[in-house]
Length: 70
Figure: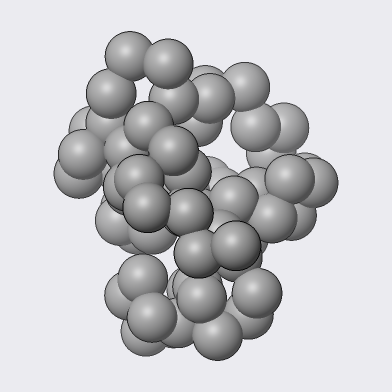
């Protein structure tokens, strides 16, 4: 579920700069650690696409995206 408040600001793809994982807030699953990301570790992307997250070196969350790139 997308979060409209800071630092998520309604974005779909959220990166965790601590783990370098990207999460899909439109596809959250049990086991996903999106709620454990400290606000200072949140990275949003513009444009808000999975491809943009990948271009910054983020890997897919195993739960909400799957198919790790590494």
